[in-house]
Length: 103
View 1: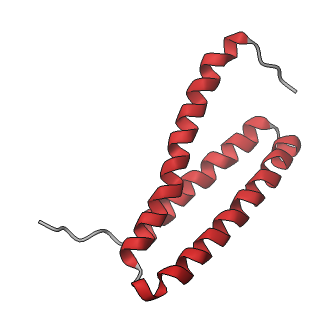
View 2: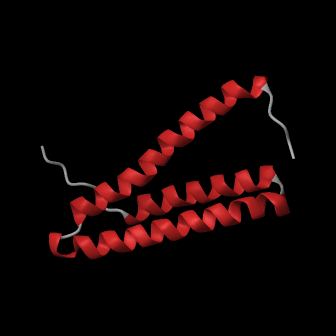
View 3: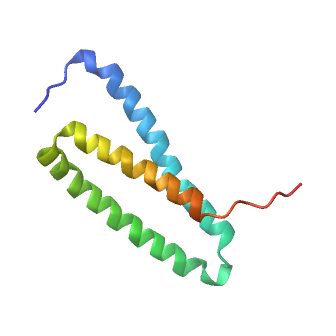
């Protein structure tokens, strides 16, 4: 277990701001894309599926993150989280269609 002291506070605050900002984008962006691309008649069903999957992934991350950190070490768990995040970006770029220009 590693400890924290006053010298860690600025880094912790900066990390919280960066993670919070990224988290807000991760939560908001997919919902915006779904609302803009799904027909209104199916929007409720698709929104419900997204909500259930988001809850399941949040639970899985909350359980598997600490387990991974215990088994593989904190550095490896953080690296794995980064790899998963980058993979999510790549999949999103490949799967989500580009918006049509309105000009």
